[in-house]
Image (cartoon, rainbow, N blue to C red; front, side, top):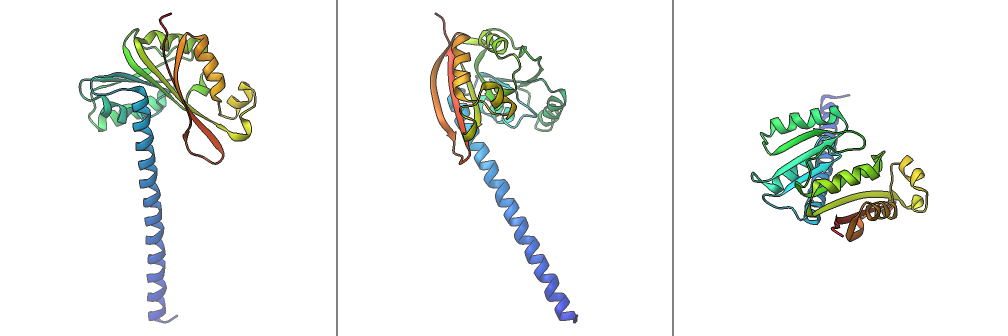
Length: 217
């Protein structure tokens, strides 16, 4: 191969590599934009703002906890709850890196989020409710942690071909339909305020959101 041919081949490879990098970068930006839009919609459903006390139940390593803390500002407070010590360790590192002082991480147990009573304006359970092994107990404790007018926002998804499956079958598939959660919320004494279905558009899944409040009756 001549020197000119080698140079042309090298330039072609560089061009292909740069194009691939641009595609990946665009995908990351689009993904971040979608996540930011979803976070805003979730926080709007929670009706939280500067000064609110909120909890991210099933927070993982904090993809939505940190934006939640920005939403409530320096006068608010966010509790990040998870049963995974590793996930909370990662979140604590992010909290330190971002110099955030308004987030409290809580290592919870399977049937209790370990939250203070009558303290929160709103709780978020995002794609974590199907992991609850003791939903009745979790709902009872979450209800107790809310202020009288506090809001519980739950969002999950279910495959379209699993919509009529049993609760057990859905959970095994890492899914959960809104009908099961609606029943469990009512049984726990919550009042259903609103339902959004679909919450996120998808061809093969139903993403839904439900908002419930404490019932004083």
